[in-house]
Amino acid sequence: MGDGHDGVGNIFKEISNKQDRREILYGYHLNENLQKVGGSMRRLKQAEKYLGQGDIESAKPLLTELKKETAVNFCRF
Image 1 (tube, rainbow, N blue to C red):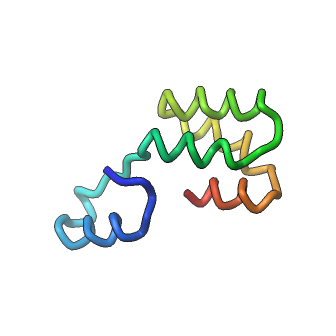
Image 2 (cartoon, rainbow, N blue to C red):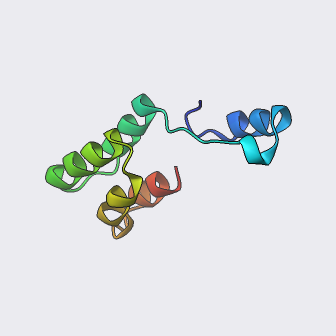
């Protein structure tokens, strides 16, 4: 489990094969970074709800249309 930092992924690559790799979003940092996106609180709350349920596909459209750099960075995260 990690927070999206490349270092964690690189370590995991060394100790497992690709078939066993699973990426898990760490909730605390996920929400912390979501709040940096800015914009509509209603949109952020809806995205937070989806992400909290593990429903990334429903959260994506709420965030990918935003052009602000913080939103773009969050979507990469």
